Length: 109
Image (cartoon, rainbow, N blue to C red; front, side):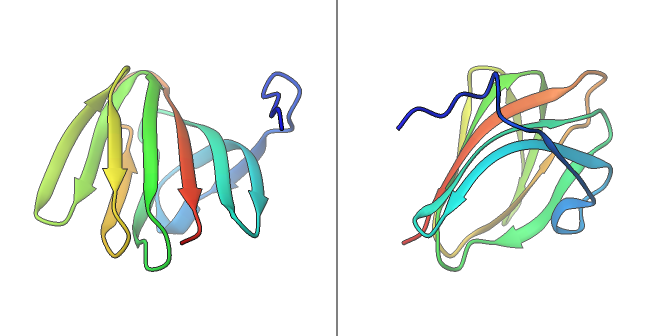
């Protein structure tokens, strides 16, 4: 299956999972999981959440920000990947001056 993000509709989700600002997302969601390309504007975030039934892999396409994890924070930038294992929690934050673009995969496990 090919997912063409050049033609996929963008959904604008304010305060995603209790975060700040707006998540601009192109998503494929089905019973097996979620695949999404997202953009967080400066000052926007995805709220803290725990992956009880899945893991999540986030690859940073462009920009920079930070990931809150249990026990602290980790800076992230373009070319890096953040992994949140099943049973763990995290939050993605754009604390930079430009957009933070990422690609995420959340398989149901």
